[in-house]
Length: 326
Image: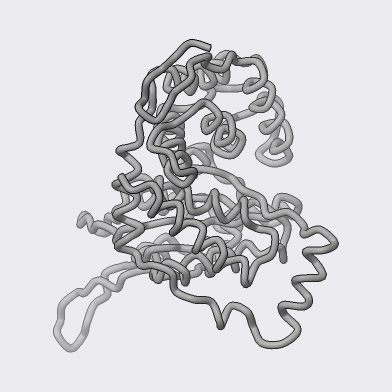
């Protein structure tokens, strides 16, 4: 595996996106890690901080098909997946593909659609396929759902089901820019629209190639045990119902492989787990005594406490995957 190629490509995409979005390097890097790991992303933040633009910039940088769907209460499942339409001239049905047949799907304000419509994404996100009238069709590679939701405005919304949350690789936040970043944003947008000058860095085929390559990253037994130790703590925590699922553990495995690759390593280390756990685990937790909303801070606090409590493996893993006790 050529880790240098992955590192260089990741930095070029991040630099390209920074021409449009200021101060979003960490979120952009995590979004690319998600793409390499074949994971979907939930962007949970207030309006106007660049959630939609981030998805558009990534799609343009990797020269991939991009479709945006505004989720509303009247949106139907067939508006996403597509449906069979009768042609009166030929007296035959033909399939009219929905927006899920793309590479990057932006599900804008996903929690404004009904649970019935939200659930139409479950098969797409987990199995990368769509079944309409008993016929199953594979989706293109790569396929990434970037969903957004506003954590503050809950009126007229439908909270995501646990099965939906569990299909998201990570939950990210853009946050507000600093004073200096805010000034840079104004300067950048004073003239022409920065997005129009965004370059194409790579293509979908190379992204798919990288997603296959990262599976060669070595994950030592000690690192795997560390992942399981954290997950086991969530399953026995007094404030949590259920804990992290096996799907969550697989997402973490792929995530640490992708993070190691973009960090220039062909082996994972415990710090990869500690870093990703803050983004990949909190949204999967069902907290006792909480309604569907208002639990984000509690979820993040519990994961932070568990990471602090669980012992970190004490092996030093070198480039040759040799371990030495320290």
